[in-house]
Image 1: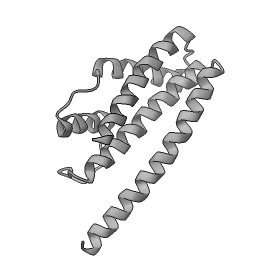
Image 2 (image 1 turned 60 degrees about the vertical axis):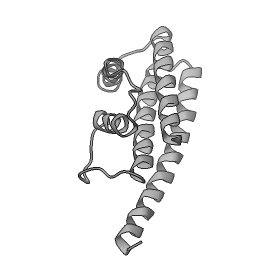
Image 3 (image 1 turned 120 degrees about the vertical axis):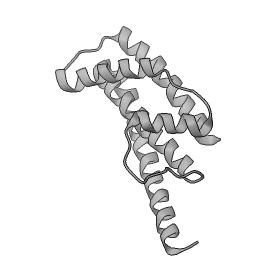
Length: 138
């Protein structure tokens, strides 16, 4: 392995560990928010968790496959890349956009989420997180 490849591998390993640590903290915070009825915060954290899990899955895939360009890409591009590489559709983009809009309202408009909406979000994100974990293991 040449020096550039070694540096790149070291970067991937360090970034991977950082993401794993961040995911662990977000899960803890998300569970606390849900259990203490802070449902708007729960939505914000679950969306953030999904973004971090998608990035972690992408890093797993990058160990085997390389993107055509070394550029920062958005969440939809990451998820599309994962689906393409794994030849598996695992996300409902309509639902993702719905929860992205709710998250945006929470962040930018101080939107309040009730328990019923939070429970729907919980089901969506748990399914998505589970899919990302399973894909990461492959």
